[in-house]
Length: 175
Image (cartoon, rainbow, N blue to C red; front, side):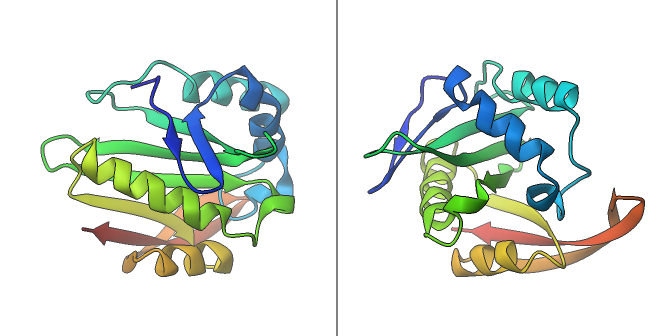
């Protein structure tokens, strides 16, 4: 599965490789990008994260399959989007994404998420996808709802960011 390349009208989604490393690290360390996810990573944590997200993956894996998102025409890196199989027996997965702030608002996340949803159902044979986002992350909330995800739960005090407990929404999508 690590050779899987997904293509949309404007984007190429390919498993993380060395060309994605600098943007991956930059996004993980950026306080603005991470403000609704986690505390920003140190350089060492971001590098370790890149190594973990770029490991070989197959359908039996319990880790994330992370795709670097690249503008096909320009070769510019946009961000990354990942899918993880949470429950192999129930065919439930989770998606997550991070975009370069200068690439946000252009429909790239919507386009990438649409393609990863299709891959998740058609190739991975998932029956349900989940996504978790902060109750304060209006951009991700709008994206998930526009993409057909439905708010399924509020996860109270789900993560601690800068010493403060944060509530998250759990969204779900079933085909």
